[in-house]
Length: 324
Ligand SMILES: *[C@@H]1O[C@H](CO)[C@@H](O)[C@H](O)[C@H]1NC(C)=O
Ligand SMILES: *[C@@H]1O[C@H](CO)[C@@H](O)[C@H](O)[C@H]1NC(C)=O
Ligand SMILES: *[C@@H]1O[C@H](CO)[C@@H](O)[C@H](O)[C@H]1NC(C)=O
Ligand SMILES: *[C@@H]1O[C@H](CO)[C@@H](O)[C@H](O)[C@H]1NC(C)=O
Ligand SMILES: *[C@@H]1O[C@H](CO)[C@@H](O)[C@H](O)[C@H]1NC(C)=O
Ligand SMILES: *[C@@H]1O[C@H](CO)[C@@H](O)[C@H](O)[C@H]1NC(C)=O
Image (cartoon, rainbow, N blue to C red):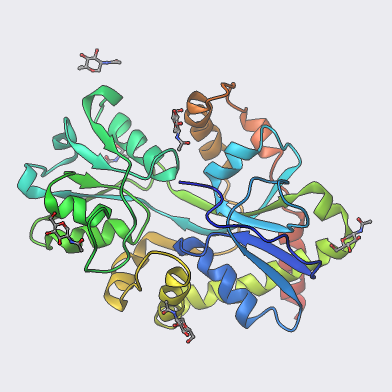
């Protein structure tokens, strides 16, 4: 999936510039935060996830940890500040293909989004839960996302329904919608949250944190984000129409229904934090990222990855929240 999903306008010098891909569920609290809790401060929102430092004046990027692993070797000044959401993956498979347990995935065709967290989860699950090497299954990477039925030709749910693939593990809610496309009686789901979960994180660069003006804006944004994450956690039915609207605006995905939201929401954990196992999870994943890097590189060590994490701004935000 391309990192630059649309033509980029260089941001104006506003108080805060944030980059994330809004068609992805994980980015939606950032947009809600800017709309609900950040005005009247001027801000710029870039609907894309550029490589760190490739366009000027970006204060915050939000994306999954795999993008951090892609960027960090060339940008050791990258700093991870907080999670936006922790997102569990699931596989949906079609029982009519004889898939009743994970071992039945041997020899099957499985839809994934290539080279990112989706393919990584599939690889880990098939390797560690089922014990398969990569020649014992086929990943199909050319589908499109779809957030509600009906799903058009070329989308992953349509590929599952037509039998072109036997199973899916793609970005939610597309996996969930895949199960709906074949019918609950035919769908079986596999999960393993201890194996891997996607960490969607906010990150910046060291120079933004050393600039007192931008650091204050970043801390203010972390405080505002906390309010949105609380709403997403405690009043999800208020969040769902916003999430559906934001993901569908200016993208090819359709508007997710409340039923779709209700089904996949238990996979999500919205909240600020820096999980204790973050560096371990990322160091394990970087073996895969480094192996696939066309330029070739050695995996980053756990210590190198831990060095990318700066808990200072989040601690400042939490301290200010406690005083308020
Ligand atoms: C993968 O597993 C199959 C079946 O056990 C084996 O024949 C094949 O050599 C393995 N391939 C690799 C690349 O390890
Ligand atoms: C999808 O493909 C089928 C079979 O090729 C065709 O009959 C149908 O009209 C297509 N649907 C859409 C929405 O393109
Ligand atoms: C989930 O993955 C972990 C780590 O590989 C493994 O120890 C555990 O047995 C798996 N659980 C299931 C239910 O497969
Ligand atoms: C700090 O960041 C602000 C806001 O982006 C910018 O206007 C200012 O020039 C920066 N200061 C330094 C010393 O770079
Ligand atoms: C999102 O909401 C705005 C404002 O209510 C509306 O104009 C727009 O059509 C909605 N977009 C989608 C894709 O639902
Ligand atoms: C995905 O990774 C493979 C293996 O490293 C590489 O050959 C391919 O070009 C990558 N595709 C994209 C779209 O980055």
